[in-house]
Length: 231
Ligand SMILES: [Zn+2]
Image 1 (cartoon, helix red, strand yellow):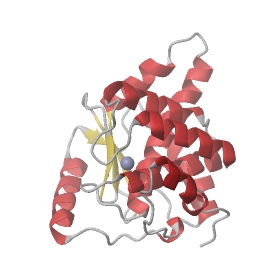
Image 2: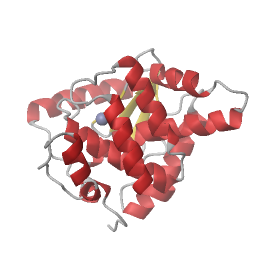
Image 3: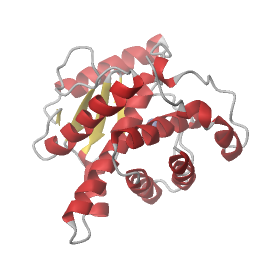
Image 4: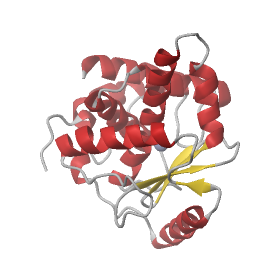
């Protein structure tokens, strides 16, 4: 279990400044992420919801439309990030036992989240990314930006799982940890850092002031820019 860097510890002082003293969090080593922060009641709800997603015909691990992109992001995580950081592999197949898996749900919801060991991404969010990146004749560049945006989202949600964050009680510190993990994972995977900014610009469009547990997307974008420049 070796890590070359610990982005959480490295950037703790920056967070303290940006969030005006919201520091003093656990500061735990991201690689040894604790998975036991749930209380029983929340745990039971998460388990039920995760089961629901996994058995839903609308949520699949390898949807026809996005399977190539999803597999690329998963393989980069497994081969570069998980290997370098000593973290468990992400399931390449949704039914791989004990691993974190990814489901894409076919609806217009513009969101992504982690439920238990499952990362859930709704197609509405993927459509938003597509309309943000496929706006020039350069489809190779657009493909690259789509991949890195998808990567940023998935790696952010993996961070919540690895760190044992409850999906029901997210706070700005947890979100910053997940953003930082994801930014660092993007760098490690070789994906384009621009994906983070695309995701934040979509969030800015939808919830400009932030949402429960999330500071304003403009602040997250600025933080990401500073941190990614320093990685
Ligand atoms: Zn989050």
